[in-house]
Length: 90
Image (cartoon, rainbow, N blue to C red; front, side, top):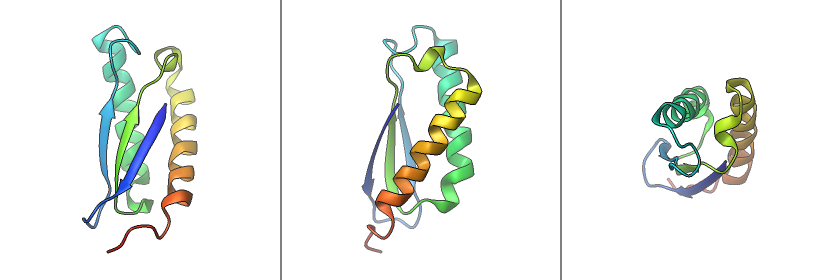
């Protein structure tokens, strides 16, 4: 997965998802990936700065287990939190 982020003028982060059919050919697989991402985001939302976040699915993400997705997302959220710490101008 790839995470893109940019500061926003709000007091909270926002999440956008882009999981295409190329990444997960069935709707069931795409929805499972989105559900895991949203669940992980809800756990990290309070710790993130005011940023707009877009999570892009990449090849192979559909074949990962739920636990592997969670671990990958936790790593992405930690990296994002480090990079964006103090970058928002509120």
